[in-house]
Image 1 (cartoon, helix red, strand yellow):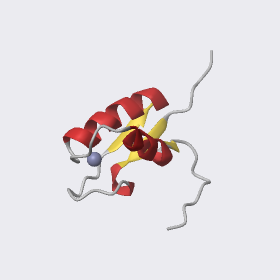
Image 2 (cartoon, protein in one colour):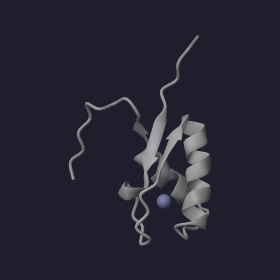
Image 3 (cartoon, helix red, strand yellow):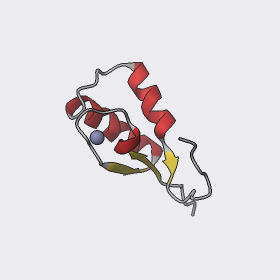
Length: 71
Ligand SMILES: [Zn+2]
């Protein structure tokens, strides 16, 4: 029984002009898959490898509260 850490992406940390505040959480695969679709359909991004990279960079551990982000 292995518990995989859930990850999440917070849209507020993703550059967007639509004021999106959505949070997508799940396994890394799920989050990336949904986030890519969401970014394209809602944020108007283009489906590029670069987009995936950007999204992966935004992935955070759901229970990793200790990490403080410098703004
Ligand atoms: Zn969004």
